[in-house]
Length: 525
Picture 1: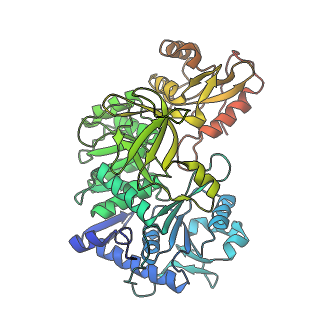
Picture 2 (picture 1 turned 90 degrees about the vertical axis):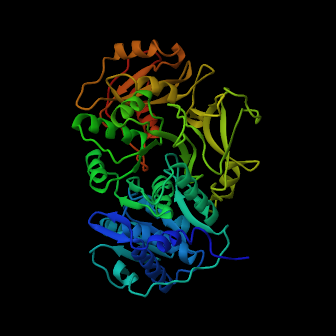
Picture 3 (picture 1 turned 180 degrees about the vertical axis):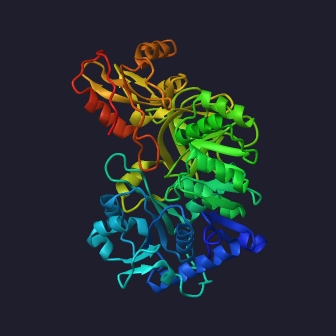
């Protein structure tokens, strides 16, 4: 029987319970839950007037703003498919998304007018709506025109399995994949995050991750709205701005990438700013070094959470418990609705403490890659999603991240997990951040190379001392052969340190150097 989905009804509980409560603050703008519901209805009516029907795609090329929130919720209401476009994309990447998904409408910010204009025929074939004061006309409509109709109160009637959201991966190698989530999987990702982070109506949640990605949209923004919490919407705030927003609005929850968490902690240590209302935070994207855990606890008196997720799951598949025992350095326990197993190269389950690939079974899993049946089939194994992450489980069921299968360095037959080497390097007092990559070697097959970002305003650490530090803590085969230093390591489109680009740069910088020669220092482009 067809009915309205839970995703379509995401705002209903908050609107019924406290319609006058502030739902979102973004800059100088603030709207209540009742206002948000009305805006979503008006956008839904506007999209319907532009010919958007059930199953049609609506792409939006927007920063973290109210229009982005309204657009995606309006898509769910009328049964359209929301297609967030990474705000850092340039014209070829935008063109690829448009060509791949063939949206009926593109909503974009005035700051991206030039990029959209450079896309060419792909953008000219669809209806375009601009947010901001950029010049509009018959071809490009202003946002106000889209919102001119009365709110559409009815919701499309459709199956839970109907596509709702296409999230594009970072595309660090080749073209990005369109990870497709159904109404059912998107809802479970939202509910998973709400439960795991224990987000309630009394929370104030600072959303600083881009909501064009699962981390911002599915684990922060929408869980907060589903819970009736207040959202403070920003776009990758600096530590200073984030601290100011937390103080001014009594923020209780704030999630960051692990690399941003380091900058946040260092700012608080140097500035002496205190944030007494903040009572929960998570560092994700990369492992949180033990020393950073200690520094965070010294500041707040409680531990930062650590977990692991992926776009194909739409949320975290493992996380340290919000209440209860947290094991520093671990990924924690499987999140709600989630089953985890580890398998070896032979496809069999591995025992406790043994390393294996992490497989996940959860209702929040993607229904596949958009119009890519081959890659979709390769993603799953007997109904389990293959994460590509390597880990182990301890005697208490906690999951420990070892590395990523595709990033593993195989040196003379021995596997080296970059994360293990990075954990040691990141403990060094003169190292701000590190990334370990493998480069081809004629004798060893592949050797580890360490990119080092020194502490702010400090010189690179002495290489001989760094080598001695690592050698005292790791086996010889794990120790980096070369060290490269830079104060500005590149990041990918999701804001994480770009491992694949750093691997390419390492090969370029080292050139034909023989195994064992001295390393050099060179900043990446």
